[in-house]
Amino acid sequence: MTPLIYHGTPLTPRAALNAVLPGRGACVSFWRPDDIEAVQQVAPFIMLDNGAFSEWQAALKRGEEFFVRADWTPFYQWLEPRLFVPGRWAVIPDAPGAPSQLNDGLLNDWPFGQRGAPLWHMDAPIERLGRLCDRYDRVCLGWIGEFDPTIGAIKPEQRKVGCDAYLRRMEEVSAFLGNRWPFLHMMRGVAVARDYPFHQRRQHVARAKRAPARLARRPAQPLRSQRSMDRTASLCRQIGRKAA
Image (cartoon, rainbow, N blue to C red; front, top):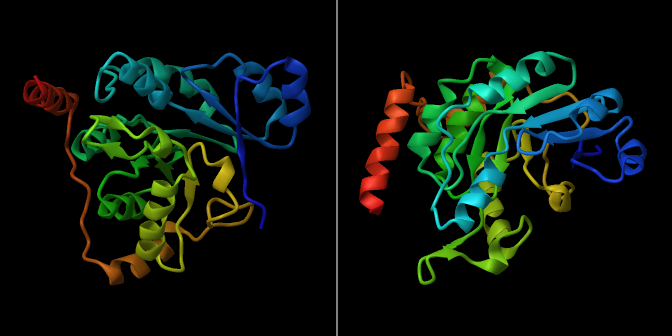
């Protein structure tokens, strides 16, 4: 089957957008929503990204370890009139580079149910990927690079999807998932879209049907619940004190 590839926007010149996107998938980021109106006119499949990765890249340039947006209300307001159309879905807010506990906390504030997909950062415990797949119909994988403690930064040669470190991690993911992959989307993954059984143009295995196979391989580990914005803010303060 042909993988469903979401082409990143904005695309310039406008003629390129009109030539590439009709009948295809498009990704519009809250960080750069320039082309949203044009994309909605021509693309039948639209992924609405939260823009956290771009904000994290800007934070790294400022010398910050990770990015955490304090209030995602503007993103939710931007999504609401656009999301509930066939062929559209969104990436649930995440905090690239931050601990898994903080990312789990962000899931509790998501207001649009299964219209959103959580993002598993590939440096996080692989068990978290399994928990997310049990809870959501679709899960995104996000490669953030391989951190080198000797330089206190991500190795330049291991930043891109498809690098050696990425391939090694995907071997672990493949072994964990076995031969029945859930509905996964690789962020910034055009280069590897045909190398793994990512989201295809076909009916995916329903969450209720695929969960028993995973549960047989490992004990159930439900996601933490009842986190609030106060808990997220507390975690940020604690992490900030440790880093100081």
